[in-house]
Length: 312
Image 1 (tube, rainbow, N blue to C red):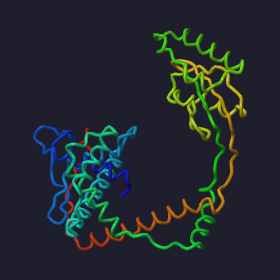
Image 2 (cartoon, rainbow, N blue to C red):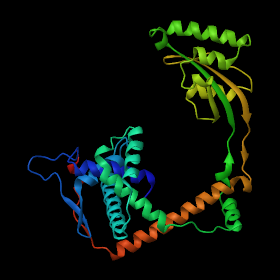
Image 3 (cartoon, helix red, strand yellow):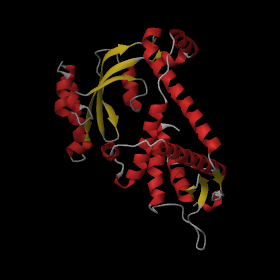
Image 4 (tube, rainbow, N blue to C red):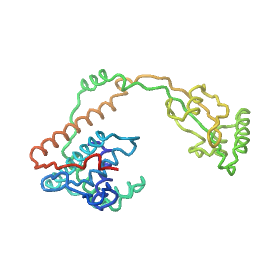
């Protein structure tokens, strides 16, 4: 299960356990039910529905077949989670309460209300600790690294990058008066044309995200910025400043100070990334083996899932 999927499980499980928003049913139907039993521990319909909602959060629309597939995938993910938690308990894996507190605070900083999810967070940390103990790194030979590099040439192509600076002047700084914002932007552009320092003017006048850094957006590949801003940055030569770029709510000025041409990483440069990937593949394979072994020895009962037509 990927890290993103684990987060979805963490967010979904307490929702079901606490009786929060779940699938709404017509009067007289059962809202919740058991859809699987894993070594005598149930997986419920509400848990499945909460996880399906995470899977389909950004989906524009789903067909009944896609909903059924998402429900099957969610149920299997939850079964897998149950198996791993049970194995962690069997191995007496314990997590320090301070680690749980730290994870709760980390999630809060991300905007996730994690206070009521401590039990699920603790179980996730138990699983992570167990897998860390079981999945020791393996020795990777120089030949394996060279073979991977040769078989995945496109993975090590570095696209052209440009060092981009932006001054953004928005109407909101002038009470919503876009004409006033234009006058200020034209004034700033004129001062730039006369040789004044871009960074100093950005710190004084820019409303952009990196104004305190002199408008420095860093080294960016083409496509990293939005629309006209990206087009302007891709046309400029090092040292050049753009004309005014009109945005919906203001005006932008772009400067490019350097260009790194497209290139390909050498084997030596790519080696750390390759080692990381090979170790990740090894950990995933060890995890698959563990799950396979746990499934073989477990008692897993699959029960009926709610039909797609029952979901609003």
